[in-house]
Image (cartoon, rainbow, N blue to C red; front, side, top):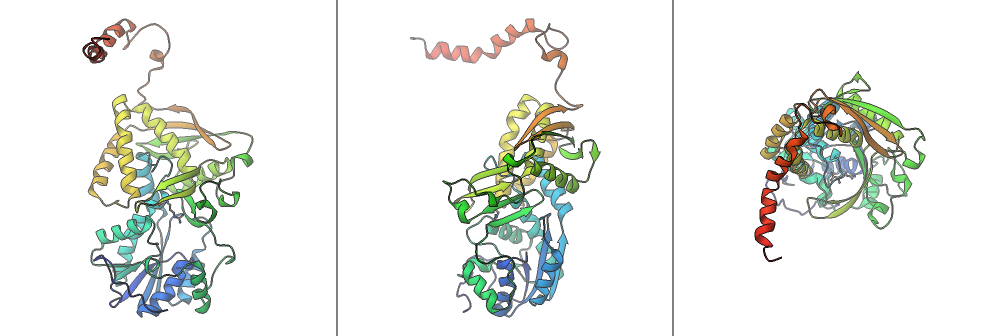
Length: 419
Ligand code: ARG
């Protein structure tokens, strides 16, 4: 392989002639394993690997580290960032009812600024001048990771070999074979492109790209299909304090454990399958298949409780800011000041989102069936068809209606005078 003749376009990109020690974001998969070898071979650079635990199920962290060492990494760092991820990224997303495009709970997007921020810290500790990652030049993740590194570690440079090397999967496998890089899993059938963490799982590529066909069953590795889910419904009770989930069926749990337990309940009942056509930041439209049981259940519960304790004006206003929050997160602008401004609003708007919500799980549906809060703006005695009383007089309603409809009535009169 000849060294890439690409010259950097942006100032934050690494200069191929001038790379000292590289921190590689290492997952143990094919791309980043080939990269680990390739960076040493092409640039004569030392490589430190960083692997970030975010609640990906079924990962063997010890095996990943051993693989990196075997392939010449001078240092292998593993950071368990599950707590930080859940508390500093997922909880804010819950307060913001965060869904992009109406269906994607942003688990990948939420993780990237944390991974990049962690990488900046580790790069500095280990004297690295460059951070390398396995993102392609077609996705959102490159935007999120590059933008965050450029914002938080302006002295660091970024190397994204997949954007530059013209190796496809086949060539990567040949490269791996030629350089004795262990390739895990079968190499016959190209796998889906998967990303997962404690807030969800996504699959892209292969037959999923055929948007005219339903996804095949083998995509679903987390959630049971609704058809195979139990015939008996199950009700879960989630407790919130200031918008943050704190209890499950009355038991107080740490946020990571709570999300894990809700994931297990949801996956059994076939909850949270989303077939999503998505507008990437780089302009492409793609299809993702998401499996997001915990997000589906927790977001439904949170939204219900938020509506119960908020006024009509707050309820009408907040969704537009929720949307803006989700967009900034999706677009990789976690460190954009507007996101911090919105965050302050989200915290304020969630001050009274305290109480309990029951969600019924049954064959793919998560339906809120009961709720309670000390801050509910709800008075059962006023809600029925009964007599006036207390703060509500039915006799006053016609007066309200007369004034409330004043401009509408006037407009009808002046605009339709001849009709
Ligand atoms: N479309 C989502 C996003 O941009 C998820 C991408 C996850 N990557 C994958 N290879 N499945 O955040």
